[in-house]
Image (tube, rainbow, N blue to C red; front, side, top):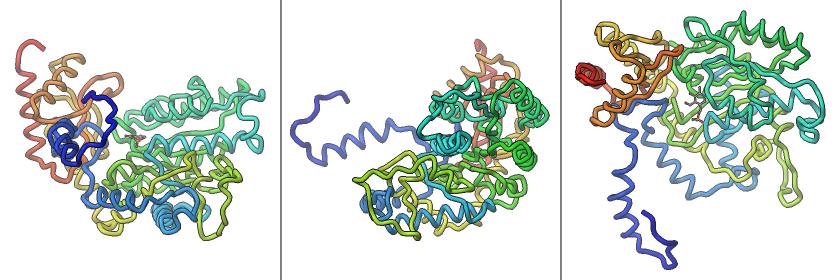
Length: 426
Ligand SMILES: Cc1ncc(COP(=O)(O)O)c(C=O)c1O
């Protein structure tokens, strides 16, 4: 594809031919029913169309006069999410590019809240005890990324061990906070997970919330993976304590099956978002209106696309009940696969199935061979699974997010893995 910058335009027919011959066949076919490596769904059919409409309207979702209808739509979906989790009327939020950016926005608000009035002017430059935050060893890497981007230093991010269900150990969390306080440090935030990236575990959110309230710590819940499971009665009880969080991340481009990109962060007191992100340069002065939110003051971006349209349409067109059914269907597939894994001696299950993913390994092969089999499975064109490292044991992971995946697909994957593993020379 290397070519000099075209000085003259080329006909659309050339571009479309290239699209057909080069781009499409060399794209990862994420809608394939045996594409199961990550928390990555096939998009619902409506959301790419919504993106097309949104791009054509080309609204700039920064200040309300540049995007009044989009502004109202974004407020509606934010309210739906806040209501789903039981968060109060004071809640604010913003749609983001994804869960990583949602976590970054939430931790910025948490940091600036901890630093107080002078957060914006002094930053971390004036001398004070270092801020410390806590999360589990199962947390997503976007938390450490946010911590380093925020200048907090990853050595002040404590990764607390988890129990046998991959949930943060509250006793060890309490111990770590006490030790840091005794050492003169300044604990300020705990990041819990609603759906850890490897096994889908959910931390004991209610107990975490009580602990945070008691110790005056900000509770952020990374629900990029699992918070939207609150749509399903099967999972809602374990997520009821989202209502107690100071901030929550969620990803419509995961369990709402929206096309990339669509993440979201909610902050219990919207003033904290405003405190962290407001900017009022003279060249952006426009009329304010209490019915609208200037989203430029709720996040790091100025120019922003109309992502809310695909989220709004997805929920309106399919309805929450359809999502509940699909989330449960994905969980059922994971449970079926785990049962098969347990029945076949070639495999070992690495973690109990609590959500829509299965971590397992080929029991006769070592870690490196398990990795090689994963690659061979992909090279054979049978399936795309992901790697898993569960309490230092290496294996494979299947994450169900495709409406067309069936039990027959699972059988086929396991048959093929058994066949591969039976070959000599791994
Ligand atoms: C628990 C968790 N947090 C954060 C993220 C990052 O989300 P994104 O890829 O939308 O930035 C993921 C992605 O899978 C995740 O599973």
